Length: 403
Image 1 (cartoon, helix red, strand yellow):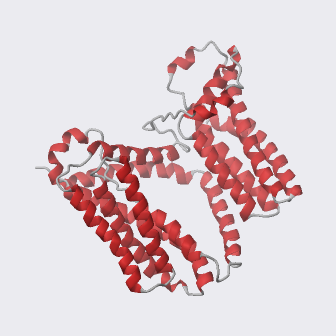
Image 2 (cartoon, rainbow, N blue to C red; image 1 turned 90 degrees about the horizontal axis):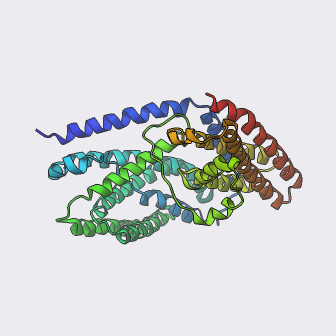
């Protein structure tokens, strides 16, 4: 006889075992030390910045927008697999307890995320409002309740496959969440806060009525679950080989102008392969953009003096380290071994790409510092960044590729 709770325990056990296995590799890596150093540095400068805030700082608006986004983004873990749309479809009416457990797990996981974000912004709030940290736990409880309502709404919305419905839902929920939190952090009347939160309950009732008589959208739920696991696998792939990671290819036509600079000589075969892979496959290009933007903002706003150069080197290292899997991106494609090309050409193509990417990032960090008219540190960042890039590409990365 089918038992939904036993199925949940089995699926959760598989999920826990698999993620634990990869998390062991992640937290044993020396990259964690770099992240801890980065977090500590950012925390120091953040603490110093908080001390400069005055009573007219719009802390309620900032907290409402930031935490409103966290509330609105409410994925629900189902642990469904491709085969479930065939074998579990006839048992859909018996899976209520299964999906209920998925909702509870999602709430617990996202409540922890809310705790982290609230802990980060609370020093601002205490400094500006002149209150104590005693309001932290009441605010956290309110956030968890709102997150629970958001998860319930999100589940009902998933009965509709129309992309417009999903986008409108996100926009409406974010607006309501942000207004409710703004009233809460502004210490408005409890009746106003309750009235704003009541809108979420009305939305829940509305979507629940619309979902009546509709079946689960199995393919959509499975697709969302695969996307979440793929995101985790991409992170784990930075530390160890992940066989389950699927290649994602995204055409970025606007980047073809850079491909035009490559020659079509026999020796440039691997250059074309790696440059196109960097632009189109996986998340290499997006990772480079994100780290460059965050690093540029960090060196411009959060640091001064030698700290700017140190932070720049950290981000150059993070970018280079996370681009190393690009070397093995095509390792399972046997037809590459048929190329009548020397292995040194493959080495040169990869190191040239990695060098140029890190040189560009170094230049952007240096320019960000020069814009602040800190010419000495700006030039020092460019010089040290270039030297570090050459060390990383020709010594460190070569050793890592041989491991």
